[in-house]
Structure formats: structure tokens, C-alpha cells
Length: 277
Image 1 (cartoon, rainbow, N blue to C red):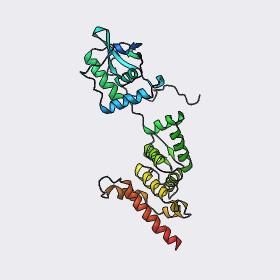
Image 2: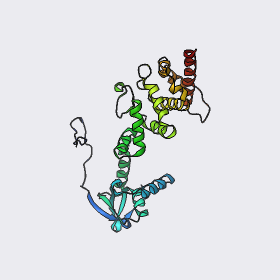
Image 3: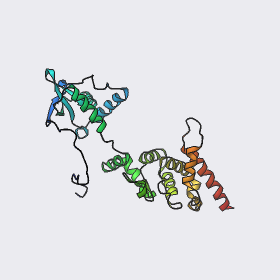
Image 4: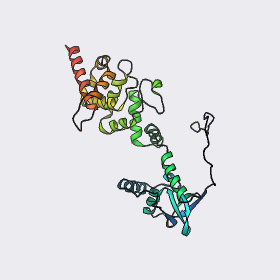
């Protein structure tokens, strides 16, 4: 499979190893009745956490279940270092035991491990999440991918601003919002209006321009159908309008992108009316 790659650390240099790796952990299935939560360092499950537990339980699949990290404590039990939400969800599903990685750690080291595990977790960035959703056959991701292809948009990740090309964006969540709110034709027209005008507005496929353009071209079918709309946009300085938007006062609760949408719509109405005349 050409999508598989090996673990390669040849380009990591100057790494200093500050800690010993410690005893190797054991992997085993442990009954939930034998697991415990140490409140001296563990967090209580908040209202948001309870929603997470319910969501995990409702969509429980072993392929989505990460190994629980535990440490043996007195009484033959194991303290959960990482995974209490997953364990609560497993209990809700009536599951009796879960896969655990057992580490040797006293209470102090357990607290250190809890802190380290939660601080070192690498958050999955939206572009990577979109890629995974697409590979999994998610219907929304497939629809969004079709919109992007039609508009000439490329979702990128870990790309420096200096290497961005025409149509590149990292504003994935904005695109998902547009797909949810507007019709596909309006979203495609809005995105193309950014990309096809002038020099392509490289680097300007950000949340606010995406929201403003898709709103205008979804509401104004007359604009998206106008033969001269891209020519009119060639003279619209999106970067300057974006800068003005950032400094313009707005009413509480008003989205900032609406300032940009108002300026864009006024510009097009004025320019296209002159063309018609």
C-alpha cells in the first residue's frame, strides 16, 4: 500500500534524553470492578465530560477505544491514570473488562504521569481530521470534498504561509460550516470568487473571507450568475478590506465577517451597475 510509511526519526537532531524510561509496562485485560479513580490527582467528570461519556457509549466500538493506563494500588485494585471517561462509557455499555497498560508507579508518579499524558497529547488538527473522515467514507466530508474540487480549493496542513498556493486553505471548520448552512452552488461560487479574482488572493482563504463570500454568493444568485463578476472582483483588494474589517467597530453579537460581506456586496453592486450602464 503506497499510503503506508515507516517510522523514521532520521531528521531529529539534538534530542536530549532527560529521564529513564522506567520498567516496561504490562498489557492485560482488567475488569472494571478492579479499577479505581484517585481523587487526589484525577479530575471529576464535568457536565461536558458526562456528555463525552454518553457520546462514547452511544457510538462505542473497540476500534475507537484506546488502551487505559493504570497503576496497581493496595487491595489488588488499579488506579486509572488515563481513560476514566472511556471506562465509564464501557460500564454504560455493560462491558465487564477493558484493555489496560499497567505501569509501576506510586501515587506521586501517577500524578506526574496523569499530567504528562494530558499535556503531551497531540491534538488532531482539523485538516488531518478531514482527511481521516474522508478516508472513512463520512458523507459530509465527501460532500465538502466535492465542493472543494469544484471550486479549486485544496485543504492543506502544516504548510508555511510562504508555501501556500492559489486555493490553499487550513480553515477546514469554516468550510464545514459553509457546507452545512448554504447550498453547494453558492459555496462553490463564493470560494471561486476569492480564488479566481486577481492574483488568486493567496493566503486569504481564511474564516472571515470564506464566510463573507459564501454568504453573499449564496444569497445573491444574480451576482453568481453575472458574466462580469470576476472582472469586477479583480479590482477588489481583499487584503485591504480584511484589514479594515479587523479595525471596524461592530455591535455585540455581530459576526466580524458581516462587515466584510457588506463591503463586498456594496462593491459588486456599484461596479456591476456601471457595467450594465
